[in-house]
Length: 443
Image (cartoon, rainbow, N blue to C red):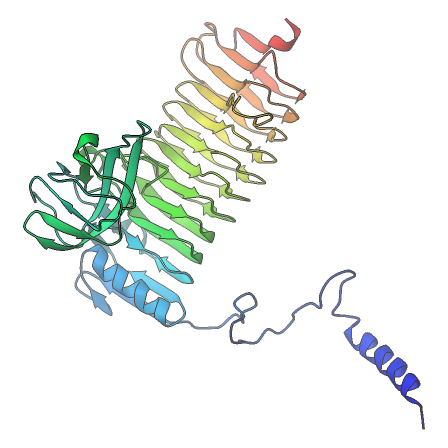
């Protein structure tokens, strides 16, 4: 016989011994054999098979050649808890975005799977719409159809800025169209409002755990007007987490290739973003821990644009060639990022630019690492391989090869602004410049 105190002591010892191999100091027990549990979407078993739907133009579970068949497929999978949409070879012409739900995978058939945007039209509005309205009136219907994705733009009479509203046309009577949601802005004729058939090819808001791979996104740039990367792109995400892009080609979009705003743990791996009007890859404001790895970023406005407050990201092993302005641009409060083992060549102005941002007490791109990159032939006669502007500080630029194979002209390897803080330059190899390092702090 043992008393209650002895029993509890003995039980605690036995249980502790049983858990000893499963518990790390200061942490929860390690989950070694997860089970599917209602409401628990963090620890899911690795199932051998999940639901798959095939989509094709003339064969497959669902058949069609527009965004509607893909939207139907992902919506069906969302209702079933997720799965894979296998997109068979063919060209699918989009009049609206495909809106992605959580827990789906879009798997194309490689270069033979092409998602292309229609040519855009822009029509003026013919009547006022107030912020509480859910309809617009166009001067003429033109090529607009019910189901089309549109962007409404107007001058804000109060601020003078441009308001941008993204909606879908869901009903029509004559020149009047009902919108998928209220406008929550004023579309008054005094602001010269317009309606344009502009939209991302793939988009989502407040979703997570999506994989997109082995397909081509074509923005039909020559037949489309520009859509700013804060609103669109070949791919545009807002407030999404844990998206993965693998072997995706984003091309010819009159805007950005990949744009994701306030999105965390996004991976862009082995993709090709080229010939887009603006940014190749745009980790947008507030995005945490992006990984941009092993991509080809060619002939965009900028290869990689770290927007505002992008932190703890990695850009590694990318080939960044022929971008019209900068290979990489980093600035407003973009801290604690690593740019390593990239090859950056033939940038129109600067290979890597640390932007000057004085709109706050300390909003410069501090505590970033530039390591083992090859940067060559940057800019015109006054080109700069790495330009550190403003009060940027605590940046390490180490073990890089900076080369200029054209005539030296007035070209500079590394330029550091007079007001910059601590910049660690170590073991960099600079060759062919008129001036290897221009440190304005010492002048």
